[in-house]
Image 1 (cartoon, rainbow, N blue to C red):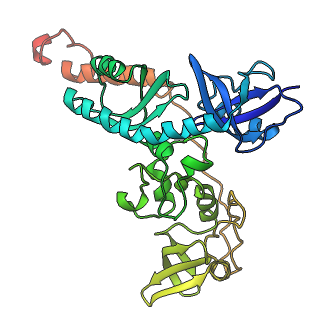
Image 2 (cartoon, helix red, strand yellow):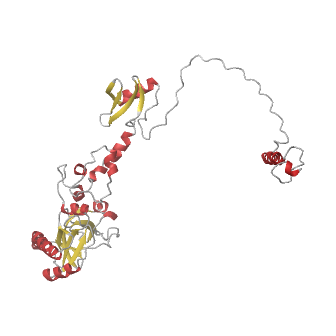
Image 3 (tube, rainbow, N blue to C red):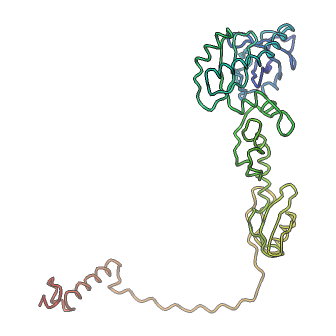
Length: 362
């Protein structure tokens, strides 16, 4: 059975391949030659066996055969020799000079694009150019000029700013290498609501990473903040304690403290002590220790002297319905007829001939 390995190339590009050499197993960091787009490329082993399948799987961005069954993936052609590794290193050293030349040609064509990185294929049959841009770019003339200059096939690939940071790598404010360049395989969306839930400063310079977007690590502890905050009273809520009505000013999730304020002044109370005071004072119960919070239970009020309720008296019998009040529609029609009689001149009914008064109908 072929050995499944994960091969990593420059940047965060990687892929799953099969190695048919059962007697000569590949190990981590071994350099291998693989079948690439219209040629050959050189990469290094980053995972082997089941570990490679778990790391890559369907989320492997650069692996077109990530979900292919064993034996159907692209095969590894051979181990790389020392001369081939030296050629590969020489290409990597020349890429920065190539990038500068491409930047000059981009400026000459006045194109709104930023050249982030370039990558030679090991056999020099393809040159991939990675760039970022806020708008659509027509680079057809640039591609023709670069193809004639470098005598190879040119591929321009537009990437986002987060993908650019993952490819170029760097050191974050935590002092470690970017997560997106090391172990983070999928860049999930991060919004400002995560910073608000954690009560962080909304200053962009403090919650943004090297790419200029929100920090990916804002999502790591978000679930902890949301779950823990359910145990505390909401900020701005009035609670009934041993000192009367007090307002919740702030909460300290890590030290389990609540900041309260009333007319007597502010104070800091542990969460457990606050719950005991609220229960002793008979106030509305605070959220339970577990999430979701339990529904508040109504407490019986203490007994007090209550005046005896008067004996109920029999209600007077309801009057029998009259003929006029038989139905609302009949009552309404009779009222209309009475009004017409009064306007027509008396209750005798002799003068309803249509004049404005009874004299006209005499």
